[in-house]
Length: 309
Ligand SMILES: Cc1ncc(C[n+]2csc(CCOP(=O)(O)OP(=O)(O)O)c2C)c(N)n1
Ligand SMILES: [Mg+2]
Image 1 (tube, rainbow, N blue to C red):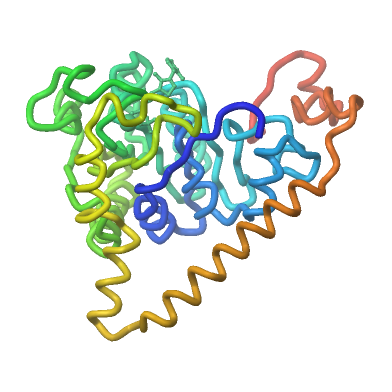
Image 2 (cartoon, rainbow, N blue to C red):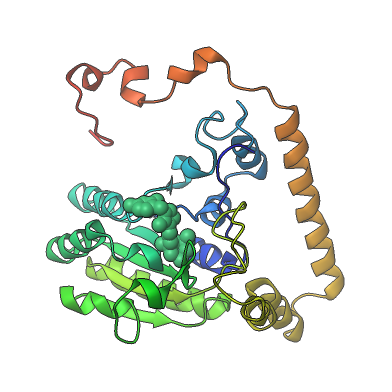
């Protein structure tokens, strides 16, 4: 794998809850840690793995790697690698939906380390001012690279409270590991955004077990192994859901094991597929860089590139 691979292990429930809450007209976008959102949007393991391997069969033809995974057909506008860059794009998505009266709203995920970017605050301000239907969702996994929330942000109680400065509604959801509860809160906030045509800032407590990215050698230096273990034991979204379903009699341990085997073999199939796939050719390097240029639209001549014209 070339480049960085940013894992979402520990944060799975957020992506599933967001997808469950999304309606057909809605759109979503995430920050650099977004592979869970890419998978939940329906991008296949094969396309993702091939993209990470830099192969022509990858979802972006092997050109982007982790930082460009997206699925426009399923309204997922991708992983944006620049901290908080996804926030004005989400506002743009919401603005066009409102302007064209198409219905729908935008879901915008960002890390807790991205809330100090100026563009995030500009976006919160305009979204509230214009009444844009965006659910801003902070996935608070406590760390931004190797820096803890306490060392990077000035706040009282929680980060979502900052919405008060913009007269925006907000909520902190501590149960980021508990899928049904999380879904309930996300869907309730989304309902307010859609019906009220106004933004909402939701903060979800979650955790990532591994390093900032796959090659982060300091993953256990800026936090204790005990802290990681505690989260694994008490707040793992997969284990939590499994226990809940077993207790309710909705599934058996045997069925869970079969599902796990199925997922593992799908992942291994994706690895073999990616390995066996061809690399992009030299000719491909200038293809699909700008849609307008490739398709020789009028916009490609005067240089104005817009999505919906
Ligand atoms: C504007 C900008 N500054 C710095 C970086 C380098 N960078 C990449 S991810 C990251 C930390 C992000 O932390 P957080 O928002 O908490 O997301 P997480 O990785 O925890 O999901 C930083 C500083 C960047 N991508 N963009
Ligand atoms: Mg973080």
